[in-house]
Image 1 (tube, one colour):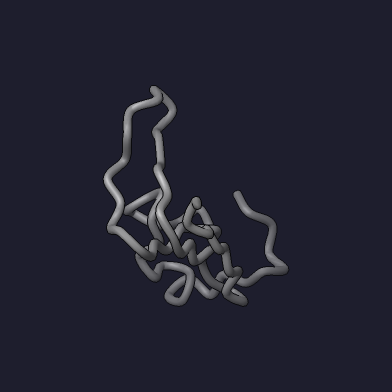
Image 2: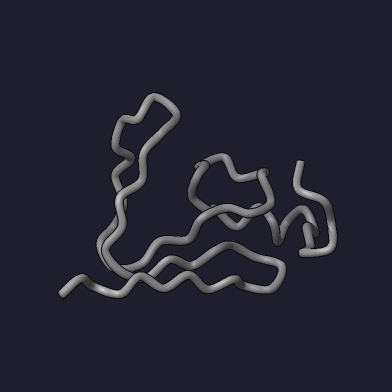
Length: 68
């Protein structure tokens, strides 16, 4: 049986992905992820894309602001 993957949307924050996932860049090369849980950027301002680095808090980004 496959492990369930869950995606939670944090208000004014990242997507939290829980479960076994694989990420690939635009060249289809694997992007290393920590097993179990990963936070993905939604604001587009993270220096660690595709991962969230907390920049949304410092910049005041919110869900209602259009993503760049």
